Length: 78
Image (cartoon, rainbow, N blue to C red; front, side, top):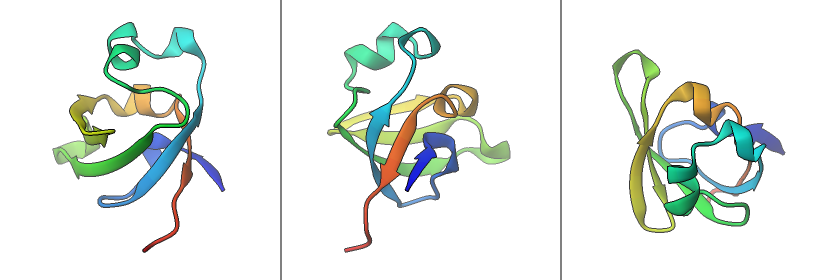
């Protein structure tokens, strides 16, 4: 099922499927936010913004507004 990155819950993992390049800052692309990479939602700050992610071993925080533009497919629970 394809959902946006902003819809993940804490601890869930997903694979990045697609996004519009103009909606995602270049810095995120440089840090590995690319289709096919695995992402895990590590933590959400108070008021749900920003979101703290682990993308292929890189830890970064992004705004919920940006995360809403990144489409992911949730991985099955192990």
